[in-house]
Image (cartoon, rainbow, N blue to C red; front, side, top):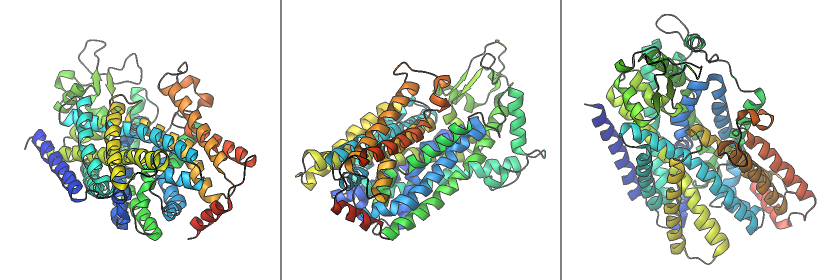
Length: 553
C-alpha cells in the first residue's frame, strides 16, 4: 500500500477512536468536566498523565533538539524527568488532599484572597497559552508533511479535532482519549527506533544500540563526533552552553514542571490521595519508556541525515527530501551553483537549512522503513500534540469559567450555566491557541521551555510555600507571583519577541538564555514573597489549620 494511503488509514482510525471515546465519555456535570468525576483508576490516570506530559515537545522536538545540539540537549531530559519526579513526590499528594478543581482554586483558598485567585488565573492563562502554541505548531508540522497541506491549514484541522472532544467531554473525555493516545504515541515512537537500531547496530533495543558500534565496528557516538568535526560543528558529546545556563535551564524546567497547572490537575481526577501516588508511579514508568529512547533516536537521525544529504546531488535526492522541502521545513540554497548539497557549520558555505522539529518525523523516511511505520509515526505525533493541547485547553477554560466567573465575577452561577461557560471558554481558547500555533515564538521545544519558565516564575513558589510554610500570607504570595511573572515576561518579550529594544544572545543578562531565566525569576519570586510576608499581617489561624491538615499523610 502507498504511503499516503497508510497515513490516511492510520490517522483516520486514530481520530475515529478519539471521537468515539469523546462521545462515550461526554461530561454531564461540572465535576465530570473539570476533574472526570474523581473516578479515574490510577493506572488509567498514569497513562493519561504520561500522554498529557509527552507533548509535541517530547515526541517531535526533544529528540530533534538533542540531535542538533548534542550534549546541551540533555537539559531537556534532566529537567523534564526530574521535574516530574519533583511534582509526583513533593506536591501532587498534598494538592489532591486539598480537594479543589484547579490550581487557582488552591491559590485562592490557601491565600484567602480573590486577588490571589485573579493573579493565579492570569498566570495560568499565560503559561497555558505559551505551552499550547508549541502543541499547535507541532500539529501543523505533522499535517503539513503527511497530509500535504499548508502548516496553517494543519493547525486549523488540529483545532477542530481538539475542540470537539475537549468541549464535549471535558476532563472525563480528555482522560480516556489520552489513554488511547498514549498507546498510539508510544508504539509510534518505539517501533521506528527498534527498526533503525537493528539496521544500524544489530540491537533491537534502542537504548543499547545507542551505546554500541555500527556495522563497521565504530561506536556510534565516535562516528557522530567525527562527522561533526568534518562539517565544522562542535563535538556531539561536548556542549557549547555555559555551566550556569545549563544549570538554570534544567532548574527552570524542573520547577516549571512542578508548577504546570495542566499536569497538577491530573492528580485531582482520582478517588483518593493514595491513588494520586499510585498514578504518579505509573506515569513515571510510562514516561521513562519514551525519555530513555529519545537520545538513541537523536543519534540515529543525525547520522542518517548527514550521510544522506551532505555532498549529494540535489536532483538525486529521495522523495522524502522533496516532500519536506515543499513544507518549507527543509531549504536548499545552491550558493555555488554546482547542484551538490553542502552541509556545513559555516553559515557562508552552508546550503542546507533543516528545521529541528522534523528530525523525528523524517527519521523513518530517511532510513527507508516500511510505509506503515512512517504512517504510524505520523499518527503518534498527532496523538502527542493533541493530547497535551486538550489538557491545556481545559485548564484555560476552567480558569475562565470556574475560577474567574464562578470564583470572582458571579459566584451564584448554577451548574448548567457554568458548564456552558466552560464550553464557550474552550472554543475561544482554541481560537487563540490556533493563532499562537501559526505565530509561535520559536521551534516547539523552545516554545514549551518558555512555558515552563513562566510556570517556575509564577506558580512554584506560591504552591510550595502554600503547603510547607505557615507564615506565607496573601500579600507575600500575590507580590511574589506578580514580581516573578513580570520579570520573566519582560525578559522573554525582550529576547524572544524583540520588545523593549530587543537583543541577541550576546546581550543576555549574565549569559542566561530566556529558557533558563525562569530560575532567576523564581528566586526573585521567593525573595519578594518572604520579604513582603515579614512586614504584613500574619496568616489567619483557620488557614494555618488548613495547611496542617493538608500535610497529614
